[in-house]
Structures are given as C-alpha cells and as structure tokens.
Image (cartoon, rainbow, N blue to C red; front, side, top):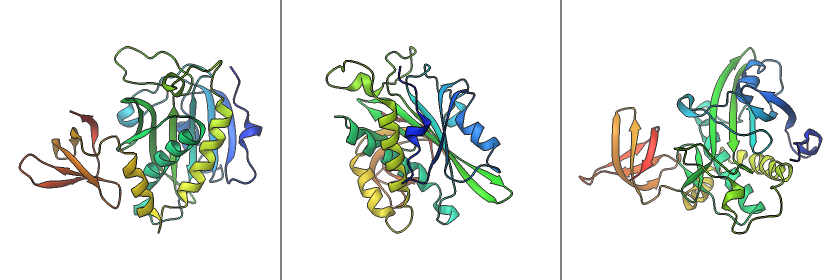
Length: 256
C-alpha cells in the first residue's frame, strides 16, 4: 500500500489546501466541525474512515488504505439556489478523471452515484453548513479504487476490479486523487453560464437515460421511463399513461 501524500496532493496551481488524516470518523463531519475556522478550499482525505455515510445515513465502508475517501469545504460563486449543481458537476468531474486515467467508462446514476458495469463505484453527498461568515458547502466523496471484495448484498465494485486486464499492483491513489482535484476545479467553474453545456456532457454519461425506473419521491413511489435530463440535470419521467413529470429529488432510485 502506497499511502496518500499530502505534499504531492497540494498543487500550487489549484485552490485546494489538502490534509491527509490517518483515521477519522467521517471526513465530512471533520470539516463541518471546523467549517468556521478553516479556509474555503480545504480538502481532507483519510486512510481509514470509521463512520462514513451517504444519503439517508447509509454507511460507506472501505478497508484501510485502499480507496479514496475525502471531503471538500466550498463556497460556490453562484446563487444559493444553484449550489445543488455542485453534486452533478462533481460527478462529471470524477467521471472525466477516471476516463483520463484508466480505460473505463463510468456512468452517472442520478442523483449522486457513479456506476461501472451496473455496480456502484462512487458516491457523493453535499451538505450545507451555516457559519459566522455565511453558508458553506461540504462535499463528501467516496471512490472505490483498490478494494477487491464487498459485503454480500452490496452492489458495488472498484476501479481495480473493472479493469480489462489485471495490473501488477494496486492503482496509484495519489495520481488519481490529483487528477480528480484538477477535474473538480475545472468543472466547478461551470456552475453558472456554462452549466447547460455541462449537463449535455452528463447526459452522455447517464446510467438511467431511456430506462424504466422506480424511485421514492417526496410524493411517494413513482414508476416511469427516463426521457431526458432538464436544464438543471433533473430527471424527466414518462409515466404509463403518457404524462411526464420532472423528478427534482428522490431516494432509492432503481432501474427495473
């Protein structure tokens, strides 16, 4: 195992200030607790996370030193109502970073997962935090890099597992993390006027487009075919009666 190297991850050309911890409960909780004192642009990685979580407080479990678990402290330069765009832009950034590093084709599973071969390889969770100097956003990201085995019942995979040929050793997490940090910075610049172009790129990487899905929406369980993404990246569903509905948020999104 090659450990994550904070010095190698602190690129002076990027706005990030990177810290690497040996172990923490949750990188997002660590940042939230220090949001008032840390500068925007702080990023914390950890080798081991004992209380990682995703949407609906689902556990994110990963072995020590195998994967990438990190969170970013952000204050997007955009209207507050546009801050939810960050999750979509981050998903696009991670896909592009993976594509640049490896012969893989990741797909975005709305609203906040990335899939390879119909299995989850990455999850994202954005949370807003109020501080004395205003609102900030904490974005947590988990990416399965070198894990080989997953608990029964968990539909997950890793970048290493999906490679067409097995490499001699493990994937270089420092190289991949650097690529991701570069990609995140580039994509976050598109939160304003260039967001529609970003959505066009997200559309080509959608894991759901054209598929029948079911999901738990605020109004209850819904079934429909994903026709398209709208200008905000929300799902446009077609129901059995031919009517359409725009799904702006949902949990337990499944293809059927």
